[in-house]
Length: 97
Image (cartoon, rainbow, N blue to C red; front, side, top):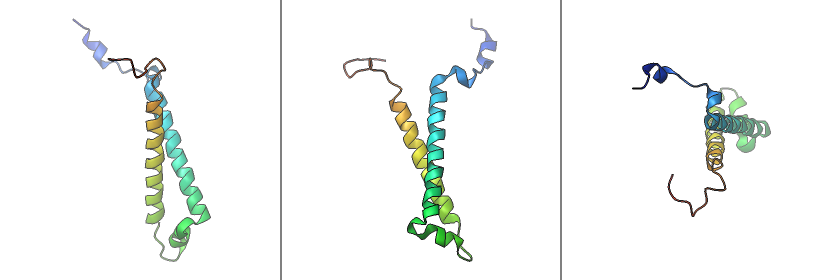
């Protein structure tokens, strides 16, 4: 029988290179979304900065834009990282797992 103590062992994240790679891609995408949001607000595209900075202005527009950009960029980076996990040996003619 297997040792029950082995089930309690939780490997270090560096022992899982795929997860570390995906987390790095997700973080890079999230940072890209933040930078894009900052650029949009700084250049006042669509008047979003003017709307947020006017008296009684609503910062919800900036927060929603930021959240949307973070989610968009992070998941695009994550999907790209997942697609690049394969190897050239994993061609279309190869079958099975």
